[in-house]
Image 1 (cartoon, helix red, strand yellow):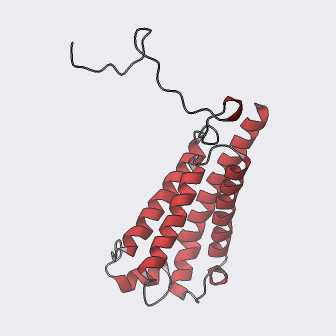
Image 2 (cartoon, rainbow, N blue to C red):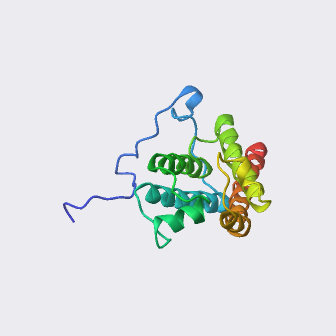
Image 3 (cartoon, one colour):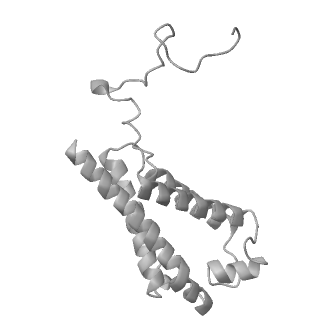
Length: 179
């Protein structure tokens, strides 16, 4: 059939373009992007979803709360929502964390260290949440209602996502060491 482009490689078609080569034949961009395992994929998706929520709140949305006042109480433990810039900064940090645990940055030492930082930060946030110590991490005193939600939902969520990221990092380190 003329006019259709073949998407598969045959001996008659030209080979796909290789990645640009750096020193010793390694890809020029710093190494292959590791494929996340199931825990890495889970933590990547969870962080991306929470990043999207923070970005949505930065635009002025109250979802999933009925209004911004109730949202502020539920997610920050304050009377007013943090400013949009703060929501967008948190969204950017969460997006970066999602990208890192999803394999961005390759499999070099710095990328693994950054992934360990993401996992450690999430675990610390989770411990602070379940122990009622989130006030140590923020410059305000969260309300009792927020602290209750933090103990029941946010803290355990952070612990689960942090544990998944740490498990993925440990598995990739073992695999890398075995290779």
